[in-house]
Amino acid sequence: MTCFLSCDSLIYYNSFMQTYSDIQIFSTGILLVFFILVLFKFWSYFSLTASKRYLKRFKSVKKLKKLEWGEFEHLCSVLFEEEGWEVTENEKKGADGGVDLWMKKRRTKAIVQCKKYEDARVTIKVIREMYGLMYEYDVDEAIIVTTSEFTKECYRFIEDKSITLINGESLVRRISKL
Image: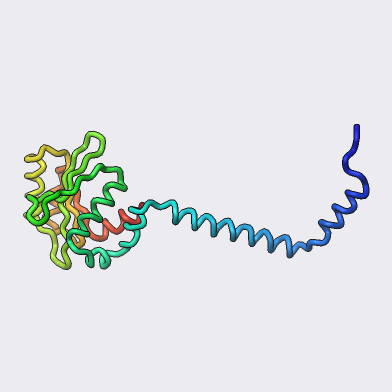
């Protein structure tokens, strides 16, 4: 059997390794870890879809309230699509009959009303209208989204119904989970 490493090459290898101090090896390791972390950050940023990057811009209720009502409806549409819904925006602008988004996920059909309010709270009237529209359009669920808050009556009314209320703070949390 032939030996490929001679004593001379082993001595050269050992002297080569001895030229690096422990500090240099440690520093190289730290730089390598830092480089890997930077690459990971770049990869995670660019792997986000355009819609997720769009949503991530709205990290506060204050930013949501600056949107125009049409932009707010579009933001809700993008969010629900990211959550797995197949979303159709209502083509009627203005008086839309109470439904801004039509959604479907597997066998579940839902309607959404988007209320972009500065300070006013969403009242029970809106919730009752959506409850009636659930039966008129034969859908399984109604969702009301607002930049503001809901009155206490709203929460009591939906207790035994397939209605979801999403206030401004909840909306920001949902966006941040993506």
